Image 1 (cartoon, rainbow, N blue to C red):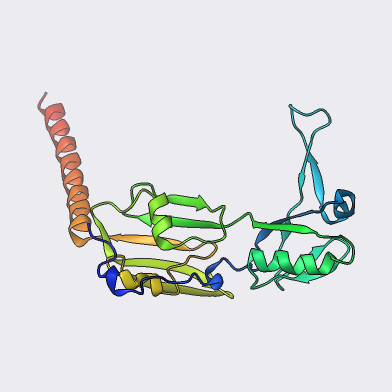
Image 2: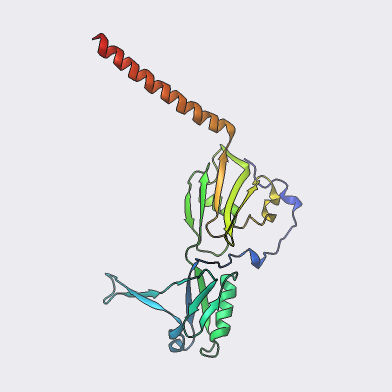
Length: 231
């Protein structure tokens, strides 16, 4: 099966657009870790919680998470309300560094989105929902995580379903065309669903198999009844 036909017609090198990175939106779950040369100064900006652990006396400690509100904000220690909607994790880290710089010298801020998932359904070898550790994933990588398409999948008509600012979105992409990388839907967002449609022959085969199984079941029941009554 051929993917990305005519890839040589694309530009030889394409500078990666930072806007392709995942943008934070409402209901995202974030972890924000602040560190600094003087770690005591950074402590007030790291919300933690204790968890039971058989390996550590008194339990272990991990970072609390921040749930992005419907208004696209979080409540950050000392600083208060911070607008995060539409920012990438890198942009939010830079923003928080600026906000706490008067309290912490040379802070280092790391931001992660914990609930970044995509689902791959249909004619793939390992359908399912996958958690993404990075802040950037495209259609090709998601399909690779699902074990690639089966030979019955329609590579020319892959459906991407998602949601943007409360509005459902969808698009059909052609994996056999190299220009697919230029589609705004090629780079995936939180909770996107990828559906690979089966070819018509596959659908007909599945339907025929189901009908054949039904007839075989009926024939088996009738044969059993005939044997029962003739005896």
